[in-house]
Image (cartoon, rainbow, N blue to C red):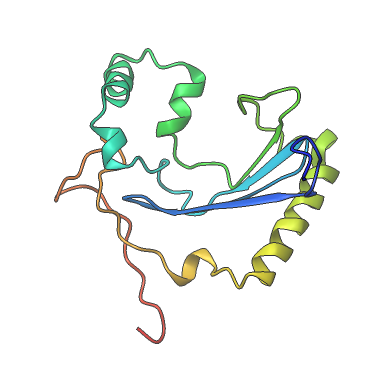
Length: 159
């Protein structure tokens, strides 16, 4: 029987590609740190339509219009976004303090970035510029809208 408390992997990897908007986010997590890479930095984080029509997101939009969002809540609507995010999950389990641009964490950031790039190569992950798809939701309201500002769809060779 496997001990559920046993540590079995050195790293866990994840990706977010599409949920009403194209994201191309990749991450690697060690036992203590998480590194996230973001593409399409020119637009705020994508909000899926099922979230956008929810009460919590609508309350965030109201707070945004009143200028009462907290610093952390404002990150949802911020553009340009950070290309890299690094979090110390032991000291900051809510992932609120981005350490990616601090000298003290440069070695950890660079190591995790190397691990993530190796995983991307090993899995034949596509680069963000190879398949940027048009959103079908307004990133600013979180709602499906035919007149929404959208990411341009890029032509990929072979299409």
